[in-house]
Length: 409
View (cartoon, helix red, strand yellow):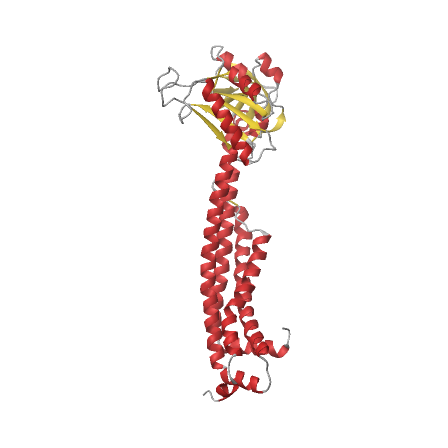
């Protein structure tokens, strides 16, 4: 394999067919380039999809009330389902082994004022468990606790952008801000790595806002996390049981898809994985089709090369060259052209991804890249492609009869 004379012959052959070798090698390099870029794009899309859910616990379930579409249990269609505080306790009692954290959400909008600064912001009134469900990162102060909830305290945890709007460079902790003319004490500031807009939000105890709005016990959404040891099958089975339970409790038909909604992140991640797998399969398919075109091109080059060197091969065989030696010569030439051109395409794609990949950050596309396994696989594919491209021409060369070859003009 490392015979100097063989490699000298290979380079001489390539020099005689520069343009043809370049064009065919370009097709192989382009195929690998396209393959790597397609796989990186699929990874980028998957990163973007996953990033959209990055600000919530991956084992989250959200239960939302809706409006019934079917008459059921004596109730007419078009009834608005309303969740209450009791629903949280009912779910806790019904699934003691399944639930990890649970919180209500009560939505409101406020006009906030601090000194001369004002702004309008959404409020999510929640329970203390919501910090873990939402993966809220408190950078200053603390989050809402059980004492705040029991005492219906007028306290708030504000987003980073709310703090910037109202306080500029002033420390907001311990300051009182007016929310719709009611004083609330700022006990914490949070950031949200998954969504900048979430940092224009305010968190407060759900009991406080229920008292402000007429001592109601209404809630808008139930958010919870299930046992983190559950796999996809168990997670989906649990969300199915949860949906059945809540439909029975609120007299919603089991076939009614509008009465209430149970949204499980596990299902969303499964859909993303399936979609990404399809895209990856398409990318691999397209890349391999282009690669096959390159292999055929290299095979054609080798056939023409052998035809031009028929007399030379005949002389070699007449002087005692074995068929295996002729096959090795042709295969090495094919593998060399394929591997070299493929590596050029691979390195070019890697350089582009390294330069621009980390700078691409959008909700649907983020940091396209390829894994080490992809590079290793591409290398193996290149070597196999080189063998395939040169196999038929090599066998043809080995079968050349010395008498016929020497008489070839």
